[in-house]
Image 1 (cartoon, helix red, strand yellow):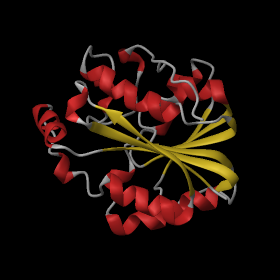
Image 2 (cartoon, helix red, strand yellow; image 1 turned 90 degrees about the vertical axis):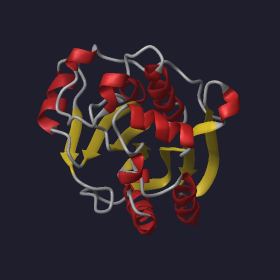
Image 3 (cartoon, one colour; image 1 turned 135 degrees about the vertical axis):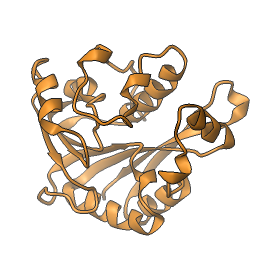
Image 4 (cartoon, one colour; image 1 turned 60 degrees about the vertical axis):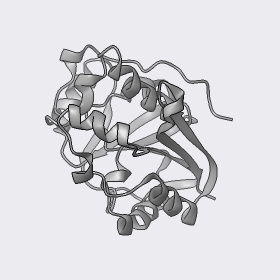
Length: 217
């Protein structure tokens, strides 16, 4: 069973550093939209089982790090664009030594079997469908046997597209894979534990986010 969902621990908005203008960290403290952003991260974190080493791919501002530090002895992070020195410095001031690098999920600079958990929140939808299998092959390579991959991806609906339009984003220019593309690639290589649907509010609008939990066997 998944762990109990716990509140996302956040630094003050002004403390986060080292991210580009597209990072959504500025939304996390907002009263309504912020709750949606926090809940998707909380749902993914609830699937993480803890252990020695966790790798977050696409860590951005490090919004998960305070929670991950309670569950794992070592935090690793890989991100295409984050200014790793600045992000590392922010969390070092809070007693967290995160091992951060720039790089891609399609070719990761880690040895085989290094991690207990690989976490990806709102990352895999940015890959093209043909790249999904390659990404999960790399994730499998760096996971130990019995290790888990936990990912979160949006479930694209007209309401979500409209919401992002209001915020100034055309998600069709950035999201290339659907939640089904991602799940199919994960199923090809891993044992499925569960896929959790995060519902919109109000609930009749359906699910807006999907969290997958798979294990390497």
